Image (cartoon, rainbow, N blue to C red; front, side):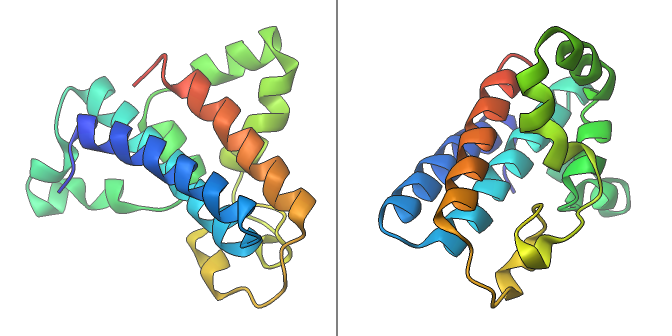
Length: 147
């Protein structure tokens, strides 16, 4: 299983791949993959915060970290308060991070990310995909200071 450095690499790779997919007109796949960039970035932050490789823990201990819920991972990373403070200082971070701070709602309409979007048969509009990728990129830039 990946550790902190691998999660960092995977976060960057998934974001790059999402941009490539978007450029090729695969908006649903781009949206879906971009969400994993955030998940991997948050898992890298968890490894740093706890100073452990979360997947080399006993199975019953690391089960809680195997979630795809970005709002849960934000809490587990220990960055919730820091993010709230930084949002006050940078209002664009609020817009960027809001899909990651709240439970996934409306993901069937491309309103937020969940691993469940893989089952969405509704086309993702190009603008929605692009906006989401941009938001993920901005959030990953912020996250890099904490992972």
